Image 1 (cartoon, one colour):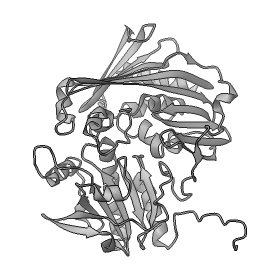
Image 2 (cartoon, helix red, strand yellow):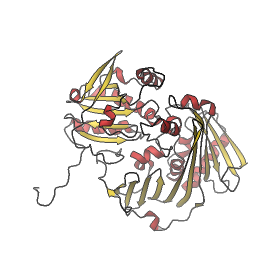
Image 3 (cartoon, rainbow, N blue to C red):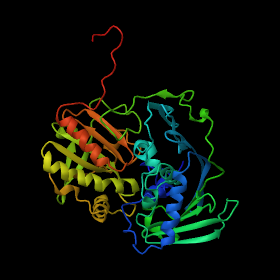
Image 4 (cartoon, rainbow, N blue to C red):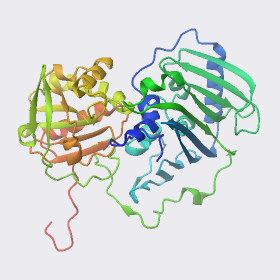
Length: 458
């Protein structure tokens, strides 16, 4: 199982430890404002790197990611290839963590290997991370504060303020010449970035081409125990990415073929009203919500709530957990969404953050864990007329909605029909949800009607 995903399965405690990118690296909204006194050579090096990528008409690498976690004395290594093929303005072939995106300039295809499903849509005139970042791919590449190295390279290629993004939260940096990186056949210019509470970054940049050849995550082993899930001893963790051979010659056109893989089935494209795309077509969309229940936090008490108690309003259920890094990125946006809804649509909408945390191994109440995490994030969902927090420690509601990854957002209309299911974090999710909620409030559906069959009425 690949621990680089920010789309984190709920159940396996050992996987939670293995998924430190989601737990810590994809992290929370930690970090500090960039030090204005950051050495000028740091910014100069990054600006030069961004300029080098921006001037390329084509790019290809054979990137490889290596991760190693030591849990309970057992090493759990994961090796994965991350090939990137790119040609301006809108051709791309990228495969990472079981998600493949191919764009031939006219059509864009997204595959999920685990599901053997694919989706196609018209190609944009110019590629952007905002367009590519929906659902599973966004969760993998840009779902956290320490984005996947492939996402970092893609950001450089797409000219999306890569230097600025990389320097967010950086507290110190230094540049060194002639540094050897394991697995690279030449000395590189090393850029080391310290990032406060998050792991540092060490980039290896080719002094001739100014392209990134290596990325190492710098982890403080003394803090691993603090950040691991309860009861899971993590003694060591490391991650490194190497570009492999790089080519700046346009790849063969066949590399960008959007023909679907053999044995894969097509799924419907995401709803037209939603800039944030569903990770995959959920079988629940368009159907009445399943029976569910959870405990709503009301002051110092709890109140049992079931499906029938919520009919009559647009309901947004946000499934999350305290150990899920991308969830911690999403929650402040959900907080802002509830404040906006409270001013414009109070009484018509309810947004409920449904914790999927189980009780800690030490026997302490799960409520304390949830409340302390929200306090740390300065999220106060339960204090307004729209936002609320619920506990689902037995994951009855999560199972009812077939939640397999976090964060997951489910939207129900006033009649209790599932209108949308979004999996994975994407920056700007609050704006997308607001637009979808307003669509439902005026009586329109987010679900595309099924096409009529031959012989049916018009």
